[in-house]
Image (cartoon, rainbow over all chains, first blue to last red):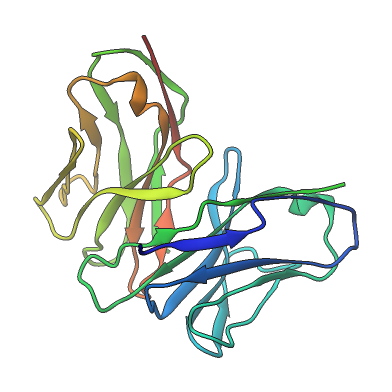
Length: 114
Length: 111
């Protein structure tokens, strides 16, 4: 089954404690992206990757890091989380090979930073 | 830059009512347009899309027509059900293969 998986689904942590949210896709998509969703603000892109070892900033990259060492994985790293990073995070992947360019989303990770 | 504007929610309707959620866009050229839906506790999934002017996307009873002259892509459904309660996002794909998102519209259907 084609899917994007994220772990963990829920995470409560404290300010300053480094964390990683994993994202994996099994569709061999070259593009991957991280979004955060906040009430009234819709989806905002954090970082995206066009392929292995190629990443770029989205609209709200401050406080986040990413890496793309393998095509299927795109982890999101918060080196020193702060309460303003409390949010719902989504990973997505897509390919430009197909005309629809549909983005496939993971189920989301709800992060609370206290 | 490119942008998407959609009507604010929540939109509350009774079952079997007619639904319209407005979406307008600003973009250079003629981008592909999408509606995504997010059911409670889930990620986003593609509802329908249109890739050129006058195209009509449709799925699950929902429709949207790509109107170049009004730069709009309004979502409609003739008779909504309680199971349609969700958040709906309008989006366009820019020239860098990225999606530009509207803020989302929460739809609540009451039995």
